[in-house]
View 1 (cartoon, helix red, strand yellow):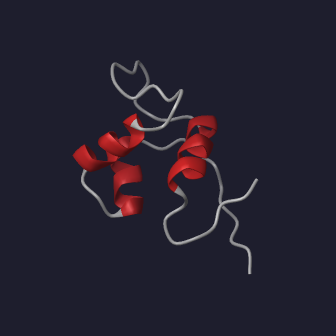
View 2: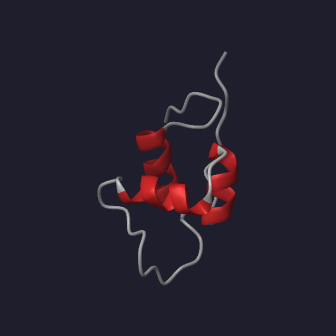
Amino acid sequence: METKVFLVSKNLKTLAAEYGVSDKTMKKWLRSIPNLQVDNRKAKNYTPKEISMIYKHLGVSGSEFSE
């Protein structure tokens, strides 16, 4: 059974809660993703395109991600 994943803007706290980790750990994980701006961001939220990059790299907590 395929789970639908909606790509919407999310902030660091929301992402950390999805994966069940602290903000600090989430930021560390995000820094490992190529071409993703983590530090010194002008925007508070990650865009749907950036969320897609995150899910491709880290996987979706509790489900499979496919485009």
